[in-house]
Length: 247
Image (cartoon, rainbow, N blue to C red; front, side):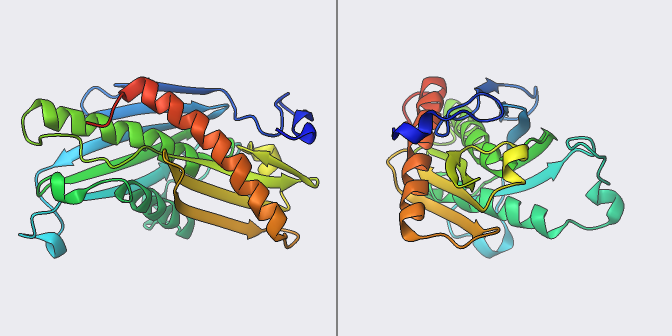
């Protein structure tokens, strides 16, 4: 940790400190896998549902599929937002986030070992305070692992077809300071905003980085990756404590 990381943020955290994380499993009675993930004031329900068929483009190929949907409750935010169902279509941000979640989970799933079935991941944000997409990924991985455990227990698969753990975190530069896991208050002021998705082994799955106000240098980018990886290691440790070995 460099000395600057000791500076405090509006909620009292150090620059490299993630918000308090709480993951409650079996949160929804009916889903094969379900968690409520809380990262600070951001709260997301992630469920994993098993469907005994695959999309048409995968039919009779002997592989499975993992896909995701994402939504935000009308009062997850400070002002009420209209339900997308009432508008009749999903917005661009919603589509982007659900594709990101699906891609990220598929990166650590061996679809050849899950049989011809689909696992639907639903991420429902009940309260948003920054980092909803990254919390969705971290929570969804636990829900997915639990759904695979149900399939294994039923004898439908031999082992959980997961190749590694998966977690995500936001990193940003706010007021010239690099910080991790941005709350909304910080995110709205960020000069640079980045979302980092990594495996438990430290490999990159996705890096979404944008200069919101000022272009950034390579040394900043290296620092984002370093601080982000430390935070992801912390999240993966929590996942391991909950779901154990991936077998």
